[in-house]
Length: 351
Image (cartoon, rainbow, N blue to C red; front, side, top):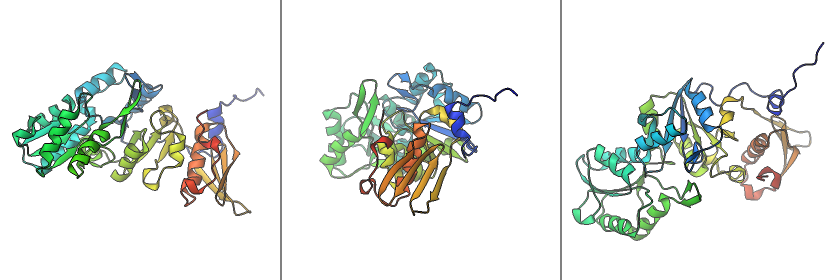
């Protein structure tokens, strides 16, 4: 009898107690963050376009961005240029969520002081408000979003207006934004500058607040949503707050070290090395109490042992992401903060 087929590392891992379900099973809406998930700067992240196009063959795919500097149409055009089939209606922006919040705070037709770029001013105008950039025009509210050209003059006008006590809406409060050259200050730093001047905080529309998720789920009429993100403090926290499943993909801001240290509100449903794993069976975590009283956590062929406050690697396994998944399960299930545990560096090493 001829020998059977040789198993690849992925296939051999699946043969060891792995559940058949993929992260997409049962999902009717896949929502993807953009920066760090679909692209980095102007370029697509490897495997992202093919994986998302494949997902779109069987379910609705939408795109969410906290970046307020571009219109939905310009975002869709960028995504299309990367090889995705996207229309403007598939893109949910934080300015769109922000104007929904504005409509609950001031009457339609009100004059709004806008700090930001075209992505924000166009949505404010489409919603029936009047845009101004001066506090001298007695605006009814301030809405603030990121744009590269925002500087002291715009922030000062916001401060002058907000000292009168009018409502303040921020599209998002991301501290950083990934760009082609690296990590740059995000809208959160600009909001913080105004906050320091006026002594109060805005209502926030974007991740990690739920308004942007509610906008997306309502627009697409979803019953079971999976959200893809690269940041724990905005993407995953926001999805958890909105009550939807989440997958952290390790192609953007947060990597293994941040995953292991994630607090209970910022832990993803799935951990993915890249978006190919959306379509692969996701291995279950098998926890076993050993005769010694230690706890064993197995994911695929990776096994870690938790003995008191000491975590050790018994078997690194064939896939590094399975070792991370096992280590995260052990740390998250320990009841201890990560600084109270002895964690081997191999769990979060990038090499």
